[in-house]
Image (cartoon, rainbow, N blue to C red):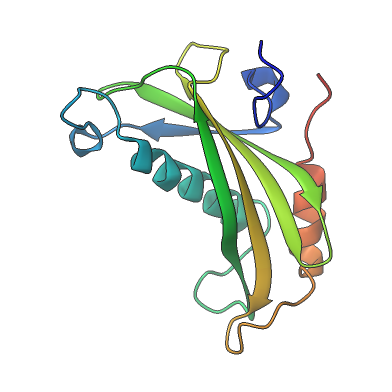
Length: 149
């Protein structure tokens, strides 16, 4: 395993997992899921966690998380009709920001096909000024910290 990987690469290291289904339109002309689609998967996993585990109301909440940084490293291809598992964990929580580690696994695989590192900054929905992470969201994020290797 290379030391320059952006996050954990084993499914067991992720405290939360979510099923994902590839779609025909996810494949590109090279016969695999296009790189930009992984970012859609990442966004889906993060927001699913925030809604289901942290009680985020995406329509009414006074604060929202804006993505300010993202990166992805790819290790193996996935393609339609693969069934996938998304791993979710939190690497670091600050006053108004959170660093996520997200990984995409083929179903029945313990090794990540791709690993992403993304940063949200929480801002006031109206003013877009940064603000402290709301307490209920903060509690959920802290519960999703990375598992030890």
